[in-house]
Image (cartoon, rainbow, N blue to C red):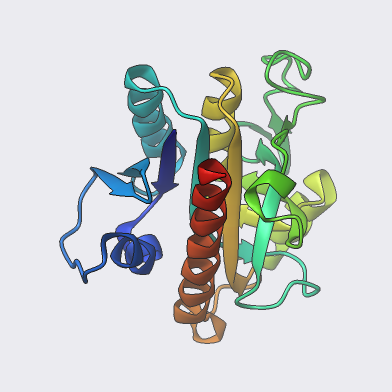
Length: 233
């Protein structure tokens, strides 16, 4: 069985890679194949953003067949009901900044009639996760709705607007590209993220990226163990 692990940056999954390989590795890479518990893992570091993620996902899926793709990363939360450091399971995505300005309003590609909201793989304009979460040991995680953006929100007026428009729980810069690629190629997928900050007027003093990365890697390794044990049965 072949498994694809995707992250935007190496530091987000460095601890996971070290756990799988059995040694500390400070050398960054864009792609690496690792054998672990008789399972082949292709690890792809895409770089930050939708464009970079789409490119490297396209390369990976064009040249390999995967039984599941796992996206691990950190994210910001719009909801105070999600704790800083909490690991969540993203089950819905949409791109929130693709469209046009109309005065003070923003019109997305669906409102501009440039995209059919039910054109595959969309469902009412959303990219919806369809993988059995029980099979991968993540059914206990909070399920959240994500938006993906090229410009993260850090100004209360624009935050209020995007909340009113899409009602998201979290925000990342890669999730929708990951979902779109997997859905288009019919690859089962999971997007697992840990919350590093609340989305508010930008203030990095309130962020806790180390805690988010620590919890993310701890859960990622648990998922890898679950997957490899399930395969070996």
